[in-house]
Each structure stands twice: as C-alpha cells, then as structure tokens.
Image 1 (cartoon, rainbow, N blue to C red):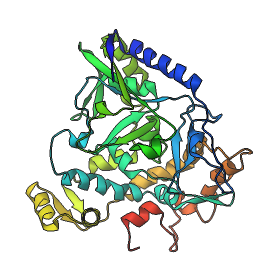
Image 2 (cartoon, rainbow, N blue to C red):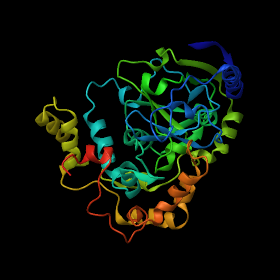
Image 3 (spheres, rainbow, N blue to C red):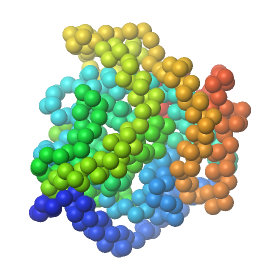
Image 4 (cartoon, helix red, strand yellow):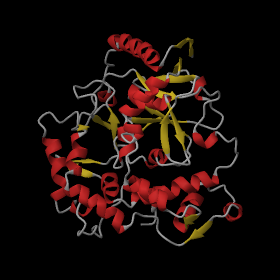
Length: 394
C-alpha cells in the first residue's frame, strides 16, 4: 500500500511512519508461549520482548536448532527500506535485468561462500561453542553476506533502523566508484515499512543477517526478504510505503551523519579480498558445488556458457590469504572479540555466566585455534552445518 500523500521531505515521511509504529506497539501483547522442554528456555518471541538495549543483538533459537543473532526488535513493529526513487515492480538485484538464467550470479556468490568459510571464526561459530554446558551453533548467513559485498542475489535488503533506511533513501550509489553521494536533485523518494509479526521468520521468506563476523550486516541492522523472479515487493501484504520530496539540504545532513556511508560500509578483509580477486576466474570446488546444488542443470552447457563469457575454471581453494587473516588476528589482540561479544544479549543469561563463558573462549585450548595465528585447527575438528554443506565428503 502506498500512502496517498507525498510528504515535504524524508523527515516528515519518517515521522509519520514512526507515529503509526508507536501506536501499534502500545497495543502489542506477548503471545501465549508454552515453554519448550529444554534446559534452556529460549523462545522465538524474545527478540520482541526483552529488557536489552535497542542496539543489542538477541540470541534467538531457530527451528534448525542453531542460533541467530537478531537485531533487537523490542521497539519495532516495522522493518524499513529506503530508495531514492520508486520502482514498480520492485525486485532484488538478480532479477532486475529480466534474464532467465543466473549462472554467473550464482557462481559469483558461491565462490564467496568458500572465501567466507575460510575465516577461522566463521568455522568456529558454525561448528558451535559450549556455554554453561550447552552447545551454541550460530547461523552463518553466507548468502545474506554476499548481498552486502557486491553480489547479485534474490534477496531484498531491509533494516531495523529507520536512520539506515533514510540514508539509502537520500543517496545515490556509483558502482564504478563504489561510493555514495547525497541525492541533491529534485524528485520523489520512497520509504518502505514492512510489518513484522511474531510468525514472520517462519511464515514469510524473511531472513536475518544481523550480527556476523564481518561488519556491514550488523552496522546496517540487516534483515532480508527472499523473493522469486516473478514477485514484486510492492505487492506483498506486509508492505506499505510513503513517498517524499527530496531536499538537498536534508540529504547532505543524513549523508554526513553516516560519514558518507563509511559508518555502514567500513573497509574490511572481505571487501579487500573480493575487490582484489580475479573476477573472471572461479575455482573447481565452486563449480562442483554449483553442480551439486543444481542437479538438473546440463553441466556441459554451464561450462560452455562460462567459457563463452570469458570465465575459466581453475584448481585452487577460495580463501583469505595469510596476510588478510593476519589483520584479523591483530584485531583480536586489540579487543575485537570483547567488542563483538558486547553487542550480544543472551535472554537466559540472568547472572552473566553465559557471557562470561563466551568472553573466555578465545583463551581455551579447544577454541584458541580460531583466535591465535600460531595455533593450527585440530585434525579432529567437526564442521558445522555450513561446513558440511560446502565440504560434504570431509
């Protein structure tokens, strides 16, 4: 639903939405919850009802048994999305060209899967850590991460922060320069607000990216809506939008507030690695992974299509270099893990014992390989869900 009024600027449009949200939040009541028969009493509604600060990421148990680090939705009835122009249909990046096949797009983000998984902390959190005698395996949303690092996917970005949405609503992005500039031209922008219910994360195609090892997703308080190529975001019943007139002065203020986007897109090892890679080369392991996940594809046709478009398949393992990981280990020495943990809220942790365990794992013999450059990963390491998917024969 598009509100039948064009607001004078982004701030007036946003205030209209936030007032609606405030009124709805005042009426929201916790659903009846039957406690699960587990020693840990996690339930999916704790991300909505908790006493944590708004900037925390709430440990939430998923149906898979893993745990997600969701942006706190305690004061949220909506997720947001900002665009400097209204598009109809509104589609994820993969589907905007009208193409029918997406081999190159799939190959690109699957190549990044392997690079991301080569990070020791990604491997550890995927495999799981023991806190107070209970195993916590965390969701490593590789697909969602690739969306934040230049890859085209079937995902549309949403955020739990209205300020983040406002930034994207009043800026222009240059893919050539990989930079943002304030939108100073006349015209009309749009601010979407997406209604989230208690069942949104298992009923809709709504996904969490939230707090991950790499910073862009949590700085943007990210969520994702997975879509098919025939769907239009504007048609979803959860979606409403307000339009507004662009104001150059306001655009510049919002742009400066986020330091030109640097606060949302900091330079990190994943960005550096991906920009420096050979963009027309993919690994054999990625090609094989793509074939496993598309068993009905004609493998010879796929190989021929890649070659015709100037790509080649090479025998190497996509991974961070030792120099790139060295910067991570240096960050660990400078308190990176403590800072990461400080962003997390564990609902069952009434006395702080879970967090105490979490902070201590970097110095425990069974986990130190993920934090110390001179310690090798043990031979008996058991991969988590993501690792088993990428390396099914290991």
